[in-house]
Image 1 (tube, rainbow, N blue to C red):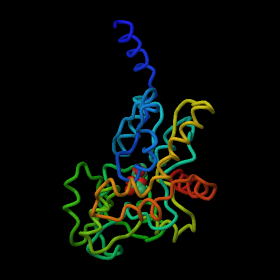
Image 2 (image 1 turned 30 degrees about the vertical axis):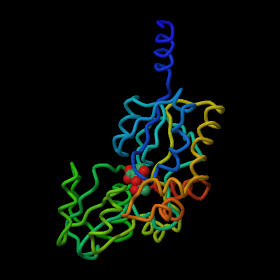
Image 3 (image 1 turned 180 degrees about the horizontal axis):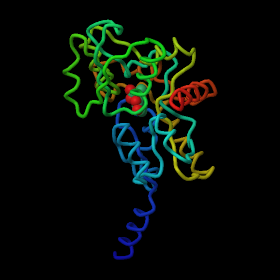
Image 4 (image 1 turned 90 degrees about the vertical axis):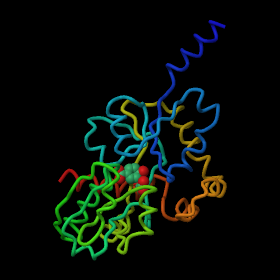
Length: 258
Ligand SMILES: C=C(O[C@@H]1C=C(C(=O)O)C=C[C@H]1O)C(=O)O
């Protein structure tokens, strides 16, 4: 009995901690990680993107789906998966919401849960729309009630899918980025701070891939009347980190380093 407990404690100690964004858009990637075999040597730690970024930086997790904007703060990092959160068309869940056209905005609140999209919004305001409203970093969820008159807000994730039903003007930031650069936009990538080894990467890619064989099942299981999740998983979010997406990512990082 004691031996079994000790064994369990030892394996608990050596579990690889995986920080994962807790939004609906990660469900297809997380599907293949929610089984006994994977969970035997991995622990999943959920959080919103800005929190997941902090977890990786603080060494609380070993691998994490982190906002691309974090990469410029890391002295050394490894992209450990062929999967990511990106968009080649409209993303639907990362938008600037308002009641007036963008050039009439005097104040814009930025989502406290985001690192990448808030940086993208600033790039678009400066480089594409040429607007210079007052920028306020939101501290908690109450900021969404401030969207009225000439005040707009960037909202991401499931809450953005909900906000789509409330706001008059919806500027999809992935679409705007594509209009500006003709490139896809990558929001988040799987990253570690130390090398993970080829065998583990192969296994992790396979775990990421599994859910894409079960998209109907995953979409239906959520019972989410707010937005068509099958469309979200197959049209809005694009999950494979290919060369064109890497180009989009490099371009965005170049804007952040300028
Ligand atoms: C497309 C999205 O991408 C997310 C946006 C992020 C950000 O703005 O920092 C980080 C991770 C992504 O999961 C979304 O969640 O709506």
